[in-house]
Length: 304
Image 1 (spheres, rainbow, N blue to C red):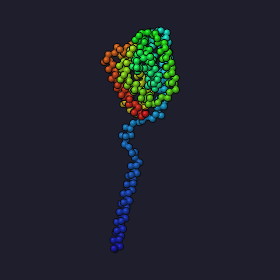
Image 2 (image 1 turned 180 degrees about the vertical axis):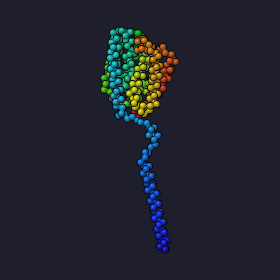
Image 3 (image 1 turned 120 degrees about the vertical axis):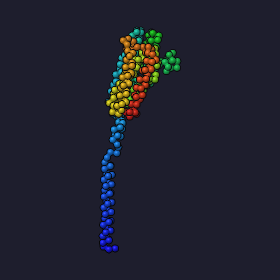
């Protein structure tokens, strides 16, 4: 091969090497630029739910515990006045105090039910016992309610009044040292309203007195307290859910308010037995919608 041809080949090889080098550098630069960019899309960054860790609920739990303690203290104080009236034989006073005393229990029902033995002793219905209304094991508010409103007497109630006071005092002591778990608080608000929608709406709880609407409002007060405490967290994770919950709370509050009365016998509400099936169905529909949305709170907040 001539020197001229050799030189030509050398130039060709050099050109090829230079091209490959440029391509490699370009490829490396491109890869480097890609790795410097976020690996997720902007849509994912916006739409991904912000889970609330249980540690961030510390203040909320503390505030709810204070609310529960306050309510159980009022329950104990009012139960003392209620049971004293029973033992004094003052039928009208005992009847008028029944609903107002119970409201403090109904507001903290998700916590009170953690103590199953006490809950049964304080709040059980006759249906929970083998001999129904004749069962000697049946005690608590509803056993006393039957005698006060159905039999219209206080006779024979002193032992039951003393036991109720003892059980409520024990509940107060246990609640004072209770550590409330986030799942109990967050889950309790939906479970409480669901029970209203599926069971209490029938009027089976306060069947002798007809004071169910007072219980309903107390249940809603307790449930709404939890939502109010969680409002900031829920708004961050799912503002639309919070809007629906607030709207349904307002709707059910308005629905129950229609049955307010100046008669103090049932804590400011008419006898539930006066409501028609249509009235009850309207309340049940809103309660069911509210319960469904409240049931989403644990998943929305990532509380397990």
